[in-house]
Amino acid sequence: MITVGVLTPHAAAGPDAEFPLIAPEHVRVQMSRIQMPPSWRPSEGGRPATSEELRALATPEALDEAATGLPAGSFDVLAWASTSSAYVIGYDAESALVERLRARWAVPVCATSASAVQALRSHRIERISLVHPPWFGHEQNQFGAKYFQSQGFDVVDALLADLPNGPDQIEPPMVVEWVSQHVSDRAEAVVLGGNGFRAAGAVQELEDKHGRLVLEANQVLLWSILRSLEVSVEIHGFGGLLQHPPHGR
Image (tube, rainbow, N blue to C red; front, side):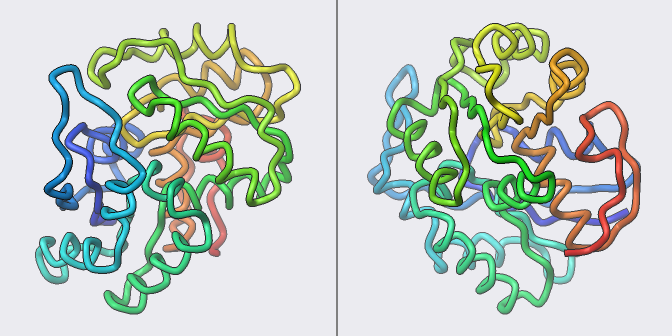
């Protein structure tokens, strides 16, 4: 059993809900919320955070403060679970923050978006379809496309899924149906972005139905965590990515 210290700005459940679902015998979660900037005032119906607000959530000070909120010695690995923040600052800045956290806390550190890049490269994927939940909004959706393009991937399409605008209202069958109807046949893999977009339950059915790799934010973050710790376990029912034990970084 490993303990993951999750750093996230999001109020909605993400890894804390899906890690125990995917690997209940192997993972426990300690959560610490990154504080939203004072300027952020959600509208009554909710609104995406602005790029400026997301950058404010992705500073060394913000992440260190969140990590300090975890009980000392309580985690084996840190996970930065904010897909959208990484999109805004870009891969290089994300990697620098991960390295800084690793040096500061002397444990492995994984980040969602970088984990997806690593998983795609490990499977020699070049063309992807990128799917985000509706609450990301068009700006964050485009930041996501640019993020993966910056790492050499051909983003065949970047789509906001026409699904309920609330994480608790989305069920895996909805995701399977929408993705099946909308993503391009040219894509070699589908990336479901957003830690609050809890779609891990849709991954296996999508892979079985379409015969291509599907990455989901919390699933791929867990894959990276197991890889960083060289934990050799097979996990079935959540896509091929987790069915083969990782062999280190």
